[in-house]
Amino acid sequence: MRADIHIHSIHSSDGKVSVGDVVKRCRMLGFGAVSIVDHNSFAGSVEALALENEDVIILPGMEITTAAGHVLAYHITEEVERGLSVEETIDRIHGLAGIAVAPHPFRIWSGLGRMEAIKGRFDAIEVMNARSMGGSNKRAQDLARSLDRPVTGGSDAHSLDQIGKSFTVFPEGCQNPDDLVKAIRNKRTTAEGSSRTAIGSMGYGLKCISEWARRGFRRL
Image (cartoon, rainbow, N blue to C red; front, top):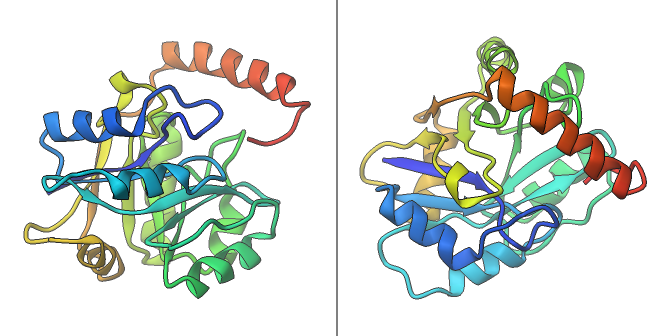
């Protein structure tokens, strides 16, 4: 079963897609599950869980800005505050019975970097992200292999056309969020999809710099 578990909605400051349209798009693509992981907001997941929906499993989550970079939280029940250390953030996630994933660890703007990813008690590493360069995804794959950690993948979509570019493959038979988390923990997932191209990186870099400046050189 394919699932895009790294999507941003309008509840992210840089997201462009409504929660309802995210779920509809995933259904149209034949995805069995989705996670809306808005930046420092749990609102997208709350809204998704409230939708009348029987076809797509909603895995609640959010992307948290720590003092060192971004951390993905899945299967949590409430918002985790931004600005904590990586270890404090992971503790909060685990305290909510969730799992902590290191997303795009080698991305310059928001990745944790190798040392933080190694030191952190992460439940999995995101090894395929459609907004990361192929080299960065390859380094993430090598890191997960060296640490013997489970893997995930996601599009990191901020617009409708980006959804599904990368994704996690779960075993067939997953029926609910508990099954998805269990599959990740038991290393029964793989990650597939595409990476960002060199041409796409030029526009992406300019966009990041512009947004960074507008935020007063503060992390998203």
